[in-house]
Image (cartoon, rainbow over the protein chains, first blue to last red):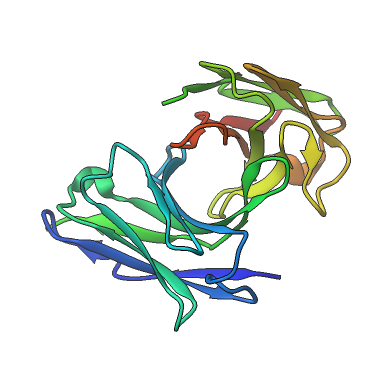
Length: 121
Length: 107
């Protein structure tokens, strides 16, 4: 069964860049038909979809973040990454990576455990 | 973006009760509607996809119905492990969007 694990700094200063990686086990990020996604959740709040990348490298981003966001694949290390520039306190959240599958609908069928990122000086 | 509205925001119920959560989309999402369960400190877990299909390993007491703009998640007989927050999510149009969640608490 696929496993996903987020990693990256837990603290980022305002105006700097947030960088996270998601290491995937028991599945290949370079093989279809899956998308690889990022979702975030501020403490005590709901879920916000950040964006996704296909095995081909095609991406879809949330328009609210598109000017600051890059999602990329590293097929050599079987992982995918998130890069969010110019962060502010509103970017403080638990960040989840997930696999998105198609079965009559796209849905997020496997999730990482999440990693808390705090934006603070 | 498509707005997803869940009701109620929270509910109190006892084990064995039937529980129904509704989700309304701001526009037609056809059957591209998914449900997730999230327990405190844990990642969400997929329960239902494509409005009514049960994800593997999910107990049959969970069911989903609906199409278009109105959807329902039903728990036929609430079990102690079902106390959690439930989210709907549309996957018809990017950006995917989630409902604000419904917290199911012990009565």
